[in-house]
Each structure stands twice: as structure tokens, then as C-alpha cells.
Image 1: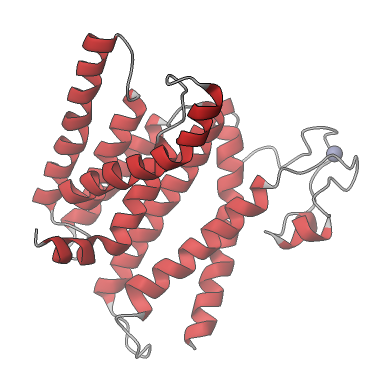
Image 2 (image 1 turned 60 degrees about the vertical axis):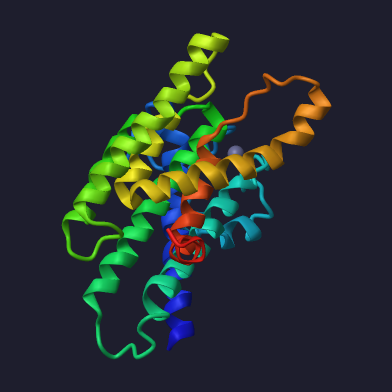
Length: 266
Ligand SMILES: [Zn+2]
């Protein structure tokens, strides 16, 4: 039964991942999300339903458009698989682990699982848009902030309303002071305004500690990944989008924050 639920969660995740691919492609281009249906960007071939099955179609089409044989970016099945794994992991970590007896529904853990799914979904879409365009969408930052606040109003959210509001203020103000000092001292933006809004949204979901966790893990992973590039380019001003790293940091904290807090005695 557990395996079956995890499998369903994975498949559901890949379907959402397929929708996220559409959002990632169309939202920054200001194109409508619902109309028209998907087309090959090279030849305009209308993508048929059976060519649009997450992951499977990519494999069957051998990664190429069925009409003009243009390569389909490998990113598409990656986003689908990533979302699938994320959904299955959330259902396991927030529900199945605490409720091995699946015959009784635990509302508290269902709410937490849905909160985790929505939080991660927003971060996945934002991260891939940031990788492509170096922007984070305000609609997702503000929308996510509102969703995080709403969950904190229920008795079952990640944090209570007080922690959520403190998280928003902390996530917005601390990075903003870093941004301001950087701008004054070095006359450059050390951190984008979009990243600051993203941190405020992360604070709405997970409070002050999640903001700190996202900044810590995000910086460490970002640094490790950018060191080879900086060495190769001999350029310290090399710019990498920070949004994906902050997102990974926030997700690490979402899954492991409790253990880390206990280990550090905070
Ligand atoms: Zn084509």
C-alpha cells in the first residue's frame, strides 16, 4: 500500500512538473498559460496528447520533435522527474512516516503535506525561471507569501502566525540591509531585490530559522558550485542566479530543520 501511494504521488508530481514546464516557458514571455496548446517552437507542430505524457513521451520520441526532429531540451523530463520525486518524498516524510497505519486519515499531517507540496512547487517554478532569465516573479513571491501566511493561520501549518510574520520581516529586512550596505560600499548589487522577496516568502512559510537555513545552505552550495567557474573566468564579479540555491537551502531546512535545531540546541 505504501509503495502504491508513493508511486501515485510520483506520477501526480510528474503531471504537475509537466505543467510547471509550461509555466517556466510562458510566464516570463508574458504568454497565456491556457491557450494555445503546446507547439514545437521550431516547426509549430501541435504536440498531441500522447506526445505530452511526462517523461515517457520524451523517451519514446528519443528527445526529438516527431515532425522536424529538433531536439527537445533535456530540461523538460528533468523538471518532471524532479517534481515527481519531490512529491513522493513529501508524502513519505510528512505523512506516511508519521502515519504507518494508513486506514485512518490524519488531517494535521495532510495539511502539512499540502503545504510542503505548494511550497516546493513555487520554488521549482521560480528556480528554473531564475536560471533562464535571472529574475524571480513577483506574482509567485507575493502569492507564495500569502499562501505561507494562510497556512500559519491554520493550527497545522509549519509555523504559527507570529513566527510567520517574524519570518517575513526577518527575511525581508536582514538581506535588505546587506543589499543596502553592498550598494553603498561597493556600488553594486550583492543580492537581487527578487532574492530578498523570495527570502521574505520563505520566512512566511518557515519563520526566522528557515530564512537562516536557506541563506546558510544556499550560500555554501552556491559557493561550492561557483568556485570552478570563478577560477576559470578569473572574474570575481561573475554572476550566478541565487534563487535556485536559496530554494535548495529552504528545502533542506524544511526536511531537516527540526533535527538541526535539536542538534544545535536552539
Ligand atoms: Zn518541430
